[in-house]
Length: 499
Image (tube, rainbow, N blue to C red):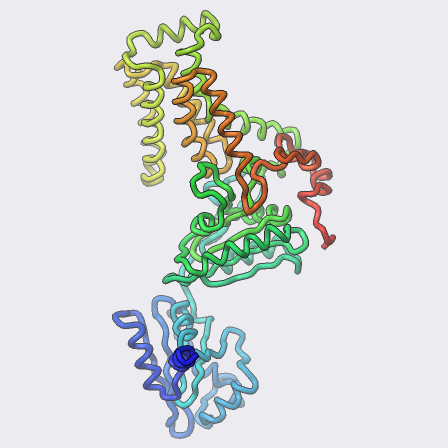
């Protein structure tokens, strides 16, 4: 108990302005951009005050915040405060508060430090154990709202989130103007003190899921959080699964659509990525543009994505199994053509495909890391040159080069990049099983994958829902995209309170 009292007393602001200044200087030792500006006011300018701020976080224009804080005490808007005494300052702000919408009273030293680090101008008064904190001074250059590069669409909204938390919340509230749309905010622990916010639609979100989420998100209050992926790792059920259990988006319309379905969204200051949880397996094959096109076209595109998933996962394995164990299943003319292209190749089909996939992944990673102006050119030209050189050097057959290219294209057709990475990881075990056991190995691989998918849970929800457990009323937005008139009345879209 005594330790708590001592800690609270040390955290309190001192009545002596010099003591507060010493504590500020000690806290921010070796910080060149910290500025302390001293003020004098009152009769004969005998009262003292000083403001503390980081010049790298505040506006370049000079604003007389001392005059703004005194304007309630003088008869004109920003006139002189020579007649104001310290007693007037204490009594007025203690009883009436602060009229300026961008200012607040600070009662503890730690809170003052936090505000200075957040880009506020904090004014300390000699003889008063409180300070005034102005948030309007904050001015940090941020990226403008543009179309997200990873989720570009032909039809639909073209605005994406940015790295500023307040602006992202504003984009969301503009699209969902409902008092039941709740957004709660807190600061992460550790060294970063990052602002984190999560939102949900009260009455639509499952109460058990929300309670589970709040229980898990408490872990973030003790960690250094720099991006939403940190939150994902802290709250997901299985960290070692190749399949993601939560979705990401940089589109406000996608985030709001998820909220309307009862999802929980997480936003972090400093990143434009929004985390959507819980995430179901089938939702990774859906895109926001599905609901902006006609029903028949959206259904066709969604079926193509599902086919692309199976091609990216098992096309190399099928080729290995057919050419190694089951050549009788290949039509004779096609088999002869494959044998002719493989003539002179010194490696088995498994090793040949593994080598080509490795070089394909290497080119893909190089294309991402290189500058945009040359990244795409290097990846395309590199793929053409390496593929042609591998064929001429009898390292790989033309059929294998085409096969690897089709596998890569199929992985690009999946909207969510996170699950495409999981598919690329699962390719290798599937190829090993097919190289050892042929078609029987592919069947075993599919059984193991299905067992894993059906056993996964996301925030306590079945990952393979609504297929397992089977929910027929929700199946209308899985393999096909039903008309909006039907989806609006489905359990996933309809709220529970008719808000």
